[in-house]
Image: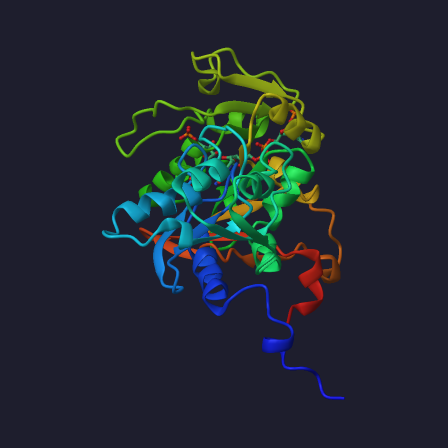
Length: 364
Ligand SMILES: NC(=O)C1=CN([C@@H]2O[C@H](COP(=O)(O)OP(=O)(O)OC[C@H]3O[C@@H](n4cnc5c(N)ncnc54)[C@H](OP(=O)(O)O)[C@@H]3O)[C@@H](O)[C@H]2O)C=CC1
Ligand SMILES: Nc1c(N[C@@H]2O[C@H](COP(=O)(O)O)[C@@H](O)[C@H]2O)[nH]c(=O)[nH]c1=O
């Protein structure tokens, strides 16, 4: 017996317009920065399936993708009846008051008649949006392109499942993989544009982590600063890992009380402590030993590697021992689909994420 035609006998749950809109929403999601919140995109479709508005999330504390897409409607001019419109979104709309209001209520209040989402929200505090919408009379369907949506935020979902902050490892290295010269000098390997970009990450995270080795070698401030070198209003917690004392006059201590020293031997415990203090996004600034410890523990979710066009031949390698003896056991990465590489002045910013285990056998 031949297989039945999918269309009439087994109508798919999602229309071609919704399927296309989900790809547009996924593309929009990729424009956001990774961090304490997942990458999310949203599209509003008119009754004929035309795209009225596209939105995405731009980082913790900014409007969620759904609210961004609803805001985009206002710029659209005459609108069709919103009860006949569909919101297509890459993650189940949230149902909680975080730094912004619940999206499920925003969608229902706007009068949108139907919602299609990709992946369910796995977080206890934000889940329940689909149920809220259904109760409010909105037609809700989930699961469209769910695999793609889950994979886009695979490390974020994992960090949440582990109850720890999302982590970004920063490395500023030479072409030959060194972060400091033989005499310990490292300022500066990367140029101004790359360093400013890295201050942009500092400005978004809740905590910056560096080892006592870096603190004793560089006396870093670890503050988020603008192009003019002025400290920004919002500053991350400065965390030094290690047992050696941090000198009383070390710059990292600062004067704002946002300084903490922890023993770094157990990176998971460090993240647990920072989570308990409310951190959703942690930046690991180094040096090599600390970077190696987080990498070896598979606790790096995002790697931002600034590659400077110089060589030193000898010096401090970018990471310490990862406990890998054979190529078969290499730590494998892939270019972040949300923005793999871009030039910054004379340097290159490369952004990567750990290759999902399920993909290891697909590599060339
Ligand atoms: N170019 C770049 O991007 C960067 C370059 N650097 C350079 O890197 C160099 C410093 O690297 P490195 O010496 O490796 O210093 P680290 O900053 O990695 O500090 C290492 C020290 O941290 C403590 N420590 C904390 N956690 C752990 C752990 N899990 N395992 C073992 N020790 C731990 C130990 O000291 P303790 O005895 O106190 O416990 C250890 O000696 C400097 O030259 C600096 O300029 C640093 C950061 C960024
Ligand atoms: N050398 C190097 C970096 N080094 C990192 O910056 C720290 C100094 O921070 P601060 O004192 O706040 O300016 C230093 O201790 C180390 O962690 N960063 C980069 O973007 N590019 C570079 O070439």
